[in-house]
Image (cartoon, rainbow, N blue to C red):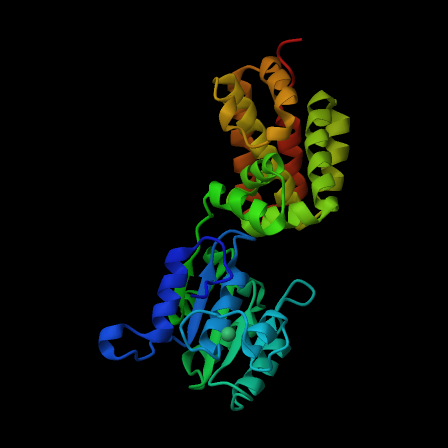
Length: 335
Ligand SMILES: [Zn+2]
């Protein structure tokens, strides 16, 4: 039997498959909604699942599972099936023109299959006019249209959009499953697969990107090195760094998130839980760091990072928040 081209999220694929085939006792009547919203952390697999769902709905086998082999499944996977359209942010926002184009296409009959399916990624990036226009389609969807939305920021969406969608909330995938998938499907050696799995925090897309994109990997190394350099730097050095960092947009959150894993690891080493650390490739350095700080300092640094991330998400002035963070970074207590 064919399986979904998705790692983890079994409950979601089961639920979606049942929506396609319908429960056996009703004679297999379809129970598809007109709109689904896939939520969950960035790179956890939302778009992958949405695309697989589109395949499952339109697959020639009509088995409730994408066969992966038919012409429909293959063309959807390649982004070349005319009734499945991907809408992504242009210049960081989803604009009203994009929604209008979608509405024009949605009003037409499907070209080949039974449905026209639109996958709209990162719906929180819709401008207010675009979100309101989309709302109209969600309220009165043409019968042959299915909208699959994704968002890593459910809290930023209009309640009216949320209420019109069936919400599929994806959780991080268990690390063992990610490690096994990296070894089996991407040929990653076990030690590196274990490291990537832990760093991924359960987001397979992140792990695969980190494996295939050396730049991403180098960026991680640089961010960790920067943190160590910052703890040794004076006030001016720290502020000069945050001036640069504050202009890096989305990368700010990635930097702070990585730093949080670092302080958490230092704390774990201090508590004799070194087996639990995430940054497995930096064991030696983490052990050194654990000796340099008092646990209260590390706890405070971690708390500061979490606070700063919260402030940034609340749209406070990034420069200001980062300056405060940098100036409060601990200095080694023991030399
Ligand atoms: Zn198929």
